[in-house]
Length: 197
Image (cartoon, rainbow, N blue to C red; front, side, top):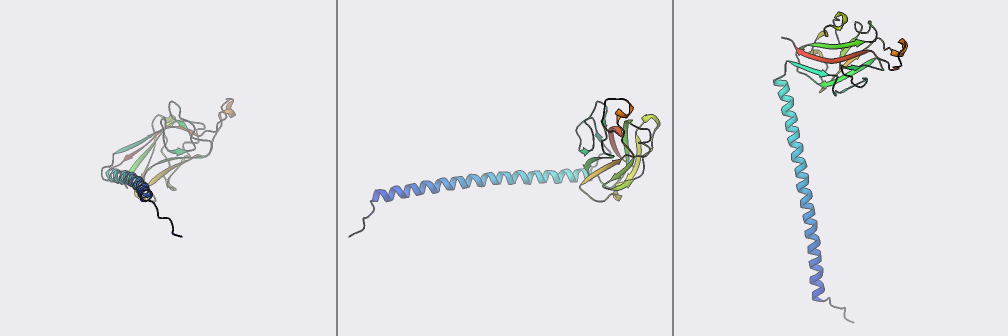
């Protein structure tokens, strides 16, 4: 018995269907290639922009940087911002993070608005990436920012700096009859770093 011979129309139809499937698969793969190329181009442009920005700040650093704690900032152990600053607490160490700055000598000024205990500010401990910084010079009544000086060349290398503020204690306003049960140290308006000549 002879095997049935496929009809020529069936063969052509099968080949057309296979061709259509291959064409569709090819178009899908081509689209994925273009999408992957677009993502790669964006990443390359982003990295080039980041490299330029990093080189720009290294080659042409501004004389002064300010972190305003009345606005969004990167840090930990802070209560929500108020109209004139942010309270540190409830723990005894608060942090602020910023990009590493060029290796110059800086004045670091803390614009302290208030403190829960007068002993907190003169006993404030500062460190950058764990490297201790000299204690701040305290001005009576917070009439002027508390200032200290450090050499950035002494700071352990890192792409991100973490400024640590250590407090000898935190105090709750509830201890003085208030309904506020937060544990607070200082209220800080801003931190300013200025390059010294």
